[in-house]
Length: 212
Image (cartoon, rainbow, N blue to C red):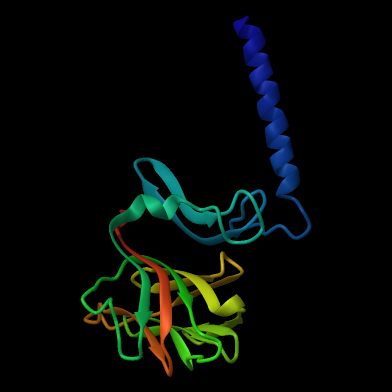
């Protein structure tokens, strides 16, 4: 019986290996850049040698070709601050006392189409992640992407690391990742609006622990 089981496992391994070789020999499959078997991936980091094993860290959506379905970041959540149903006027910043360099920020923001702000968003260690309602455009660190605020609402998730800002809009319909070198003394974060008030329908600010 053990012999039969061993033969079956060997056959399964050989079949799996052959299938993997076929996938990774596809015409447009990168050969020295990492890619998963299928679906969306982002930000591979490594290789890191630790305790006799090489490790590679990356984001992956196992269910589709757009950003989403990723829970790994939640393992690093440390302390959370939450707001809901808050009107934000120009000059206000409920995050004024919040400082740090590692955050997962999730927000649902709304505005009155009849009284549209010129722009609104977040400032992370001196760099703005800005939404322009007139242009229907999200911008961060010199990059821009079109995104529609349907019915005057937009959802954002921002991942702040020491040298990167990743911005995701409306459930991953927009994905932007940029590197920056902030002033080491500037640990401030903020949410803002210019020209008209907005409504913070929901805001969760998760301070993150280091993965190391």
